[in-house]
Length: 356
Ligand SMILES: *Cc1c(COP(=O)(O)O)cnc(C)c1O
Image 1 (cartoon, rainbow, N blue to C red):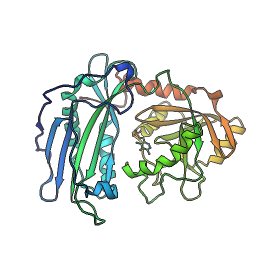
Image 2 (cartoon, protein in one colour; image 1 turned 30 degrees about the vertical axis):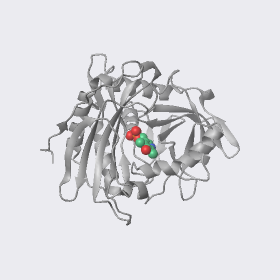
Image 3 (cartoon, rainbow, N blue to C red; image 1 turned 135 degrees about the vertical axis):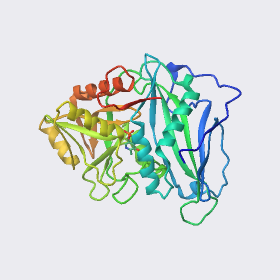
Image 4 (cartoon, protein in one colour; image 1 turned 90 degrees about the horizontal axis):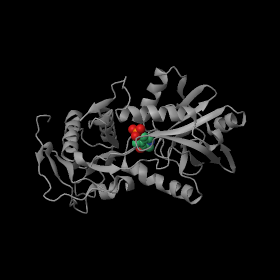
């Protein structure tokens, strides 16, 4: 499969580039996209880079009825030396196949997919925005295309990659968010699909997010689906707490999505000799630690925001404020270090960045 070549068809007309200072998340797409098909007879084949355009699918396609679909999210950064860097992209391709496996989608050659991504980025290189905090967001995804209403894994698929220039997540600098502890709805349970990046996980999370938004909170804190006691994730991010001098994050339990940012924060903290543990953390423990003055910081981690400091939690009727609602020292240090490595401004002792 790696022998496969990619057919390139360039767009005859190029779209105007957006104003980098007005970029939002995921609204503008570049001139080209990558697409590859799967059939039982031919495996993954027909790899192509082609002008960005709508695709046509049979309305009976499995994706529309049973949601057999997975995706990834990653970014490319333009350095001051005009180099294009990806951040641990092999981890995303590896996770894509883990998600594929969970949803009975055939495996994709990870090296080939990464190579295809690099070729696509090179074709649309001029779309990578410059300016503090901007990047090219990358959305690889797989959809099931067989027209069949029986409940079974599709026998045909499309793997696609879209590119979208995005602005800084923090237009006015890194700012802590208010979090609503969700007691009714759950995101995932062990044995379900929580540890895979599936479209369906997101569909089922919308209701709680909508309610939290109405109440003036920016994200929900997800608790475990069995006892609604232990902390899992914050919105679509992993979550960390600094209690006393120790950093804690929920241990992977089969319902938490293993973030590349989470892994990198753990590696960074170990590198700095900051005590860090992965274990079960109850929401009660967090509120107790706050009462005792031991809760120093909390923050979410994910590709979009990198680090999202938390300034407040509301649980039932009780709210706690962290670090006077300001960004903590540790969150800031991690944010600066990760974004400096990603943008090639700081040495990368871990070999995380990959040049396109
Ligand atoms: C994608 C995702 C994350 C963050 O993963 P990163 O690889 O760090 O971007 C965390 N939680 C959920 C539910 C996700 O979908």
